[in-house]
Image 1 (tube, rainbow, N blue to C red):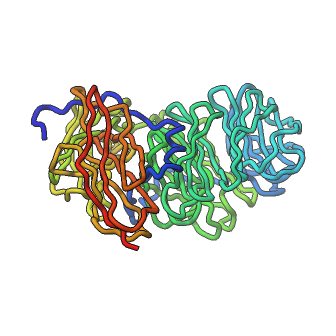
Image 2: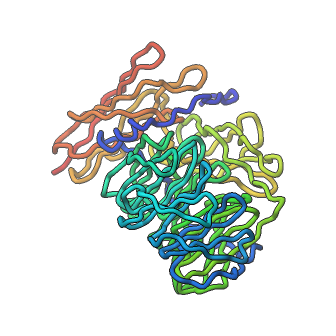
Image 3: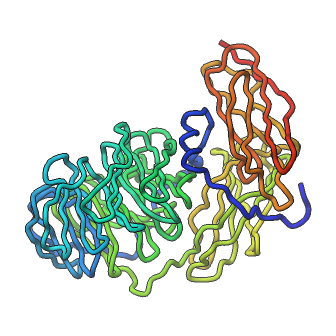
Length: 526
């Protein structure tokens, strides 16, 4: 353990899309979620009060809402569009009949797509009141956004389509097992979520996509949204989970209660808002400033309907539901993001029974100066919290840990308005030695169990940056590759080993030198 001031790792390598696919096919464990913390009861309702709008006579279910060009647009599975400039009073206009599931505005026009593979599959409008049917992309579309000069749509048949003009589309991803429900853009890339197996997809341009493993077992993601530097995904299985991520590659899971299904979300005025999709309950809307802890607010309309979507604009949130209801609430017209953005590049050094963590400060302090930082380590059972003062590289030492146990590390910034969202979780394994080692936690394992190899002691250069070359892990006759995490460690999972003893060792080259760990062993029983 060094005693001088910690050096920051000024380069943090994010996995490439090709390496993401490699995770699926080369037996590398890419654990993409943090053990969840049960947050217990939901916080007390916030100050915002929802109002029932003077909606048009319901002629069918409303499924999507958007704000653009000074007006609100609401569409559904019917032949009408509802339009409002104040979210309180509405007028309806005819549109070509269809299952209009999602709408977005970009490049001078509104674009709405259908959730059914039946003509018409798309309608477009330049003013929100006069709509024209066009051929559109074939699919069952669930969400569409406009960003980076193109429309990007996702669908329940595992499809992603893009268009630069809103009428001519190219299918860029088509894998039927996945049910893509929602898409968001932020921090330089698109993120889409899946409700079939709980996967995520990431793209820098909306055209080339990488698939990432499920975020937890059995979770079905119904919505994803970006705000205040953080992606937030919400579960639609009724388990009451949300996941937060800065970059979209690694996520932290959080649980709230009572659990609700969620199929839509938005961000505005420093707040995430999601309508709950559980009919027969008194709760109508969830809200959060960080995406981790949530408050509830009743919406005074039909409690037997599914609240399907929400949007923000002109200092108001607007929600719509399947019974034709529309509700709105006002935000502070002078609002701004009050809490800080997350700390960056959380990394550190390990030693016997402890870890020294440090980070780069938040880029945006929010509505007040950052006063401190907080580091949390957890193994799913034991949780330790370490305060860090505001400095060039905030740091602290967490002691009382168990060697060779896997902990997850997150960090938050704090100002007088509260704590930021969590940083993306990183795993860390305390070990006493600083030399390269590749071992398993259990020396004898059943052949039906995956073998998890802990690679520790990877050496950084004088600037604290780990090698760009991958680490090769040898387990019996099998090989796996990994990139060191910001603590100089790897986790690799190997399956289908033959019964008997298997040797384990790791090799890598870094900064002109080659390193090979001592050989350890694991015995596989039939």
